[in-house]
Length: 362
Image 1 (tube, helix red, strand yellow):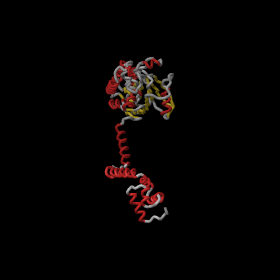
Image 2 (cartoon, helix red, strand yellow; image 1 turned 45 degrees about the vertical axis):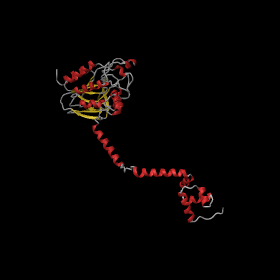
Image 3 (cartoon, one colour; image 1 turned 90 degrees about the vertical axis):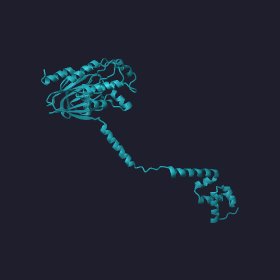
Image 4 (tube, one colour; image 1 turned 30 degrees about the horizontal axis):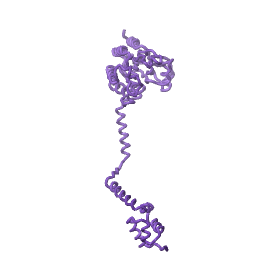
């Protein structure tokens, strides 16, 4: 077949046939041209995708139907919001700010006590309410001593409840004298009955099991009911008195523990976390106290390093490790309100008696 040039009339006729979805071979026959000539002209006038569509008339019809359906959804039903993401970022910041207002946890707090008398602060820890081997009789005896003593206050350094719940150590539930809900109620009652005495609370590992599982912070809950400072897992308590301010640092547990030297971890806390007058660690159920000169930013001064004991006796786990019953003694530190003078006692009752002597009582 002899080649002849394409004119406008030929191209119009080609366009009409393409609109009718006629195949390329039929177009070539009607126009009396070769298939190659038709394809070449189409490549000049159509996009490649259009060329693909006319290869299969059925495919082109199907695609047109999809285009019509898509157009209906796109123009009639599609929602295209005008999102201002800057407003979302602002809302997130406002929400965080409001959350901070209801969070009572703090890393440090200052408590002012206006008095010309010596005061005592007892350091309790590891009450473990709910366990079978907890010494409830001694706990109640110490509670009465604190309640009835003048100028005696209390800080509690974690593990208020045994609190073995789902996700905690396996087998602990088997040693529960009563369930976790009752444990929390008794802890709340204990703190509320001493709220005129309790200065600060620290969270222990048994308390934090609830926080990890159901986002319930037991220690914060107790601090609110006892109107006490909540120091989270540990913090600094500044005791402001008429002539002097003392710094007390508390953590439920800390690194660098030594089985042969219980107060070693407290001394390391002094070095790593900054100086203090009194430092307290709990957790290991060991009661211990050391006094000595220690160089700090405020000079080489007398410091007291102590570990509060526990009311929980030897359970199955501790017996397996060779431990005997833990120490129930509650250490107490006495503070002079006029000058830097502090004195520590491992025995609560002995310390309360000496406090009465210092304040002129017989």
